[in-house]
Structure formats: C-alpha cells, structure tokens
Length: 112
Length: 114
Image 1 (spheres, rainbow over the protein chains, first blue to last red):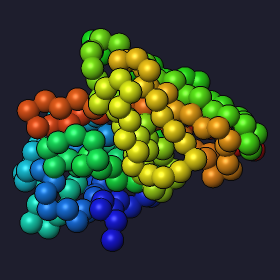
Image 2: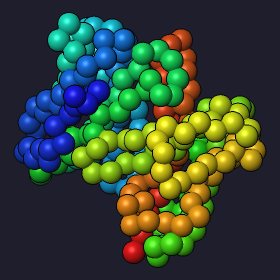
Image 3: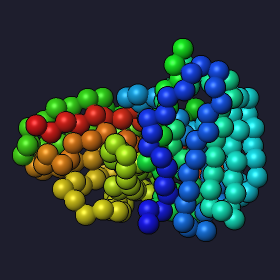
C-alpha cells in the first residue's frame, strides 16, 4: 500500500461547479496536511494547510481532515478556469524531510 | 523574502551524457534543500536532501548524485544519463514553523534523455 494515495484524474468540470479532491493515507503519525497547487511547467505552491482533524476555509477553498478515516479533502466552490492545475496533497508528521510526503496529484480542468 | 532559483527550465540530453542541474536560494541562511523528481501519476519522489554544506543524504539509490558546495547552492548531477532519468526535477527549500513543514519549490527542470 502506498503511503499516500490520490486519484490522478484528469478531472474535468464546468465553470462554477463544486470540485472535490481527496487523498487517503496510511501513516497515523501524520499531523499536518497540506494542499499544493501546481500549474503546468511550474513548481508546486502551497495552497492551504490544516493541523490534525477539522475544517479550514479560505475564500472558495475548504480543506477537511478526518484522521479517524485517514482521509483528507479539498473543496473548491464556484470553480474557475484559472483553477485548472494539478493539486497535490502533502502530509507531515511534524518534522523535516523524509517524513514529508506528497500524493501523486490530481489534474483538474475547469472548462469555461 | 525568500526565493529559490533553478535552471535550466528544459534540457534535452543524449543517453550517456553528463548532467548538472543547479539550484540556489536567496533570502535565508543554512536552508534545508531537497531534490525531487516528479513522474506522471507517481507524485514527488524525494531524491536527495541536504541540511548543510557538504552534507548529502540519498533517499533512493540511482544514477544520480548531489552536492552542496555552498550554503545556498544545491547541485544535482549524473556522470552518464539513462533514458529512465527523464522527468521533471524540482529543487525545494523546506521551512519548518512551529511544526508545520512548508516547501518552496523552484520552477523545475524538464529533462528529456534521448
């Protein structure tokens, strides 16, 4: 079993749709959960992070963490063509380097 | 503010040729630096990390090596490239703030070995 799993997509939605992106993980030591957005031919950039379980909202984006199920989600409301990118989840046990793991990423296309 | 530079952006190299990718960081001292390779559907694979000058840790045995000749410089190299070395290579600086690890990435190098 991979440490972090994520549906690679591609996921195509019409403009204005609600998008749900998800990751599952196996390491119960993970405490910090992040979402990175990567535009084509660019490096990833941090979009949101949450600590432990719960929800966090930032504008059109909501991140959810369910540690009991080892499942995290990113919701995008009123999706825009500019949201078209690859979204990578990342997790950390709270220390550096090798315990900082990325999911494979989901490629999202928002069609105008 | 901190910035991370990586070059070249794209590179096409023949099999058996050498490789040198360079990464530099500005705006911070003694950064923890990382090289990742990103393959389609496989996410970011950690290749090397360095916590200081001359200190290199390898995560995956392979045809690549890394060096940290200066505090803010991290180099990824190969003596002889293989077809399987093709991919998107990313340099990153990881910063920890009260337990949260945040990664700042360079723009990446698209390497095609032909």
